[in-house]
Amino acid sequence: AGAQAEDYLQLAELLSQHITHLDALLHLAADIAAPAPLAHVDPGIWNRVLRVNLTAPFLLTRACLPLLLAAQGRVMFMGDHNPASYLGAYAVTKAGMEQQAKQWADEQPELHVDVFIPPSMPTPLYARIFPGQSPEGLTPVNHVAEELLKRVMA
Image (cartoon, rainbow, N blue to C red; front, side, top):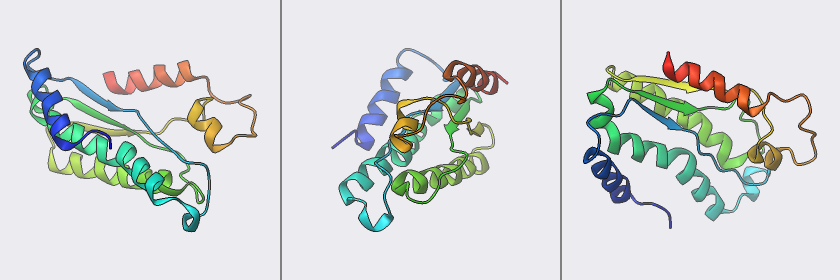
């Protein structure tokens, strides 16, 4: 069934027993199903993808908010440069995630909230979206990681 809201609160409570603030929270996890028209997406898979890509970042940010505010911390979401049709819940969650980031930024101006949109890179997620495409010519993951780190540290 996945983590519940209480689980995120317990995690934040455990963290607060060991640290006084949280400088950054990076939402990098993502889930995707095989490309298909919305009419063919299994509701269980839809819910799983929403839970990983949209609900979990909300619950984790909400639970860690006091620690983040104590540091005027940074919350970084991982976007997508082209959440296209046939990507089902993944595309929907990426659009929702960008709106979630905007709302956190508007409602918590003490935080530095950003959306990092990486170039295409050879990851297992990319291979699931484009199973027949060669990873040749894609941006190496370590280059993307370096750019992400620069953004987080800015």
